[in-house]
Image 1 (cartoon, rainbow, N blue to C red):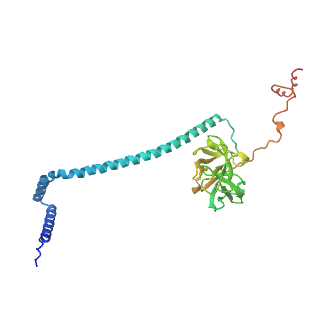
Image 2 (cartoon, one colour; image 1 turned 180 degrees about the horizontal axis):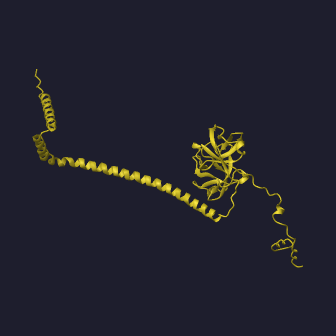
Image 3 (cartoon, rainbow, N blue to C red; image 1 turned 180 degrees about the vertical axis):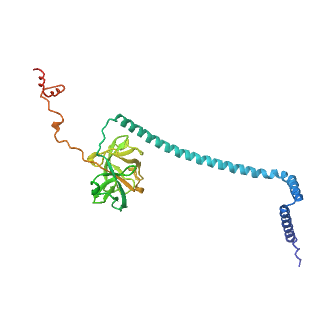
Length: 307
């Protein structure tokens, strides 16, 4: 029976690994020696062998440059996306600035308009939020003792919040625009379309009964129209937004997440004109032309034409 040959590879491999470990340990210890002679020997070793390994460092250097280039391209891409988002925001601000410029021009042209002195406000603190699945309302710490009247409009620092719906001696309830029972007439600017803002228990009430929906665009300004005497005209409500269901909705300007103080706008019913004859005096039948001026006290009336 033939005898198997002895395997010399394993002992030799173990010896070489042990010698390599001892050599590396010796080099490590030698590198830690704090001696001028050892420092000179380390310097000579580096000067002798390190420059010869430049060819081995070329792939590493190339790979590092490629990684740096990729990181630079990634940063440029992120900056480009950020600039695109800022450009979109600037376009929205530009549209808002144009609308404000138009409104400012109208106000400057009407600077002689007499404002209603009765449209003042009284501030109240929001005591609690009583919103449920079927009702959206809050309580204020002002009531009949403060002159609050049912139906008055309430606003926060930005836009319309709702109207007074129930008044007590020291408290009053505000029905929010998001309440399913809330329906107010609004005007969409700059197209001037009239619509009805209807709450549906969501943060974005929808617009209904729009005259010409094709003239309405997301981002248009929505203000109260004053129709029906529900709210004073011109109160900021929000901006038009396109809902996920495809309906035109309103992103409310009021911060419903931080309703701490509300302003109740004092208003009064408009004077009703019942006697139309008192506005335009009747003319003589067959008379064409401007009405004669009223005679001054103590003077005889002017003779009529043809007399």
